[in-house]
Image (tube, rainbow, N blue to C red; front, side):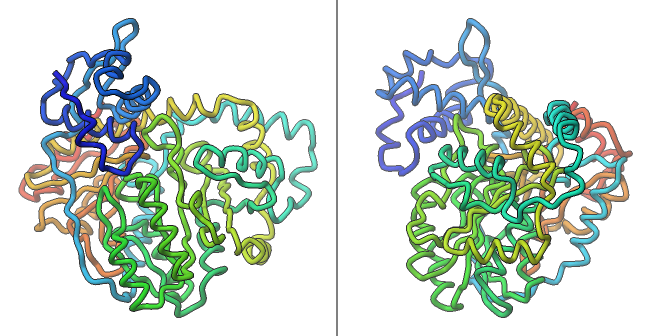
Length: 494
């Protein structure tokens, strides 16, 4: 029996459906609701908890997207196998923020090279399985556009981007709490170009940039390549960057800009509560610190609707929102975008100096796809697929990785952050995996200080059969075990 959960949730500043969903998830993990057990109907659960039917439906959809429950036709919702219930989440580490130089460029190069091995088990590549993407429809649109106008390859597109695509991006901005105009958007060659343009627009060489720790190694590389200084801010695997540490860093280091991945964090996977995003936007604005927000995984959040962004709380035009279609539709198109607020003119100028324009044929394809309808239904299927893959990989890791392993529980996307026992060297682990045609990413490169030496990032973007299909396997976790450890683990995913 499920008790009334609402009294314990009332003080938490989080969307009501998410409070309810997380409370239910906790009941599942404690065994109050067991695998295979039927959950009360939407209507009865609504009456029991004193909330609306739409709130319950959103909570159930969030849990279904995470793989915690499943819907059975004509029968209702049932509990699935718990999400790696016996494995704790990684610890929150709180070093004092300080300037640091990133010295792992050679390891980053190794990681990028390893991702090109076609025979590898792709546990390191932060990309979706091509079989999950609508490539047939995109290719059909591409052929149609090429037939209608054969001069696309002979002309430049506008620096700001094709208006039809900017119009679609503006339309979808309502989904995450904004109301953009197409004129305020600059289309970029992927989110990495958007990030670089934003950094160059708001800061100069020698300036201090606040980063989450851990954070995506591409962000660190970009900051360092521009001659700027990285200031690590300790980041909780579920609650995000410490705003207390950030405020202290702003006072001590004259922070010029802060880079934050608010939804579907890479590598931690969390989605920050709206109240946190509001406080983050207010804190940075108060001190005239530009906030560069990365939202490339926002459409892959395991909720009923896309989460809000910090940009929704921007009152001074100091939040620069970056996103991309690479993680959800077409990685090969390399199409991203940025809404740069008060920095729009400078970002557009730098875009011209950098690449003149993003190839417009790909932009036209994406614009027509978004306009044709069906994108939201496609996203729902994609979220469910990724939630299932995350669940399966988590269960396998919990079973085969050594005692003491800790694993994140993502709210979005398809990335897992795995904290292994202290004795494990993630760089050695990575190199042994590469030798066995398995790609992972060592945690060291997600920090500017050499931290996270016993952590790895695993991608669950590919289907289970693909993960189990390559390599010969190697016992690289415990050292003393046989060379079949990885193969056994990956085979368990099929």
